[in-house]
Length: 172
Image (cartoon, rainbow, N blue to C red; front, side, top):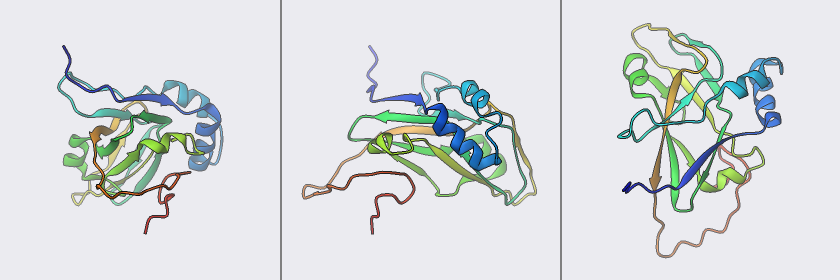
């Protein structure tokens, strides 16, 4: 018997949503359809892995200090009371000091219903202080997502509604 909670499902965003994100990245729609169809849904490498690996939709080279915003083509339907935390792959962090620009990505369950379809973007920086260039190919795993439960306070009265990502809840 598997004691794990089955609390989420990964899906791809629509072709239109991904194409718009692709155009923002490359100033063209060319290659977007093929890239989206090639993106695998995040998956764990072993039965003991906590993290679901996110794959790059395109080849990427980052010199030390360079940053890239990655449209993953992925969204996650997450049960209430759970959150998806995004981290760089451990080996890339160790070898290149690969970092997420927001330190840890927090994907809330209500993000799925946003106007951008809950499209998960991951912004990374090669923070190498040893002059190492990061070179990855389309399909290489570069980040990992871990589902975690969370609690709320006894007097919580949140009633806001999300429509977007980064900073969309206007929390002060």
